[in-house]
Length: 241
Image (cartoon, rainbow, N blue to C red; front, side, top):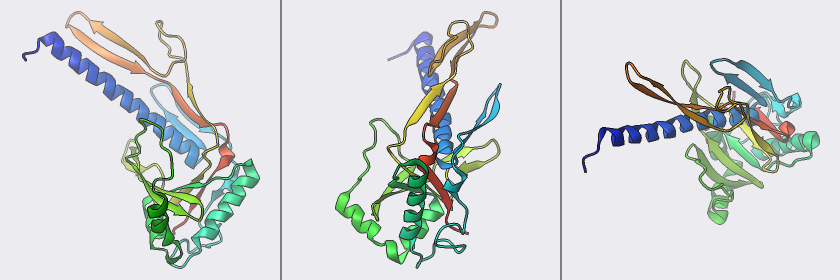
């Protein structure tokens, strides 16, 4: 059917709304990843350039060499399970939470899968299937479930974001992060500084119109801050040199 100019304009505006919302979702995912992986969130926008420090216990961050595997990191013969248990003990001591999810960067997951002592990851996957319940409508296209290893759910995470110069990994390729699913995460939103809003809402959409020349602009604003109430329930480590 032939569409009128107004019908085509409405379709374009609807797609613009979808695209703007997805851009905000990407910013929220980046914030959530930073909160979980590093315990710090960098917020950069038109009127803000701020580092939000969640004050994670510095002992929950393990530089290369700080785990039982030593400075050589994960090799084919490393006792990776000892590293993971060491990290879990540290998280439990700091927070009272016992994490059981491990997300690994691309090179870290490759090292795990090549490890002779971790071959039962694939066996566990076949036995238990996807052991993690994923919330409805959540996109996990950048996360790959591999199975159970020593009671830990093993995930690879390869999401990228653009830092203004290049595409970089949200989780370093040589890094891992240990997560307690019981720890509380919080979606915070700042007030929208617009006369028709002036309140904290997840999304605020409005139109800007000019008469000469005739222009219609769609705008969607959001001031998100994705945080966790329990930053010590997470730990991160570099496992490869």
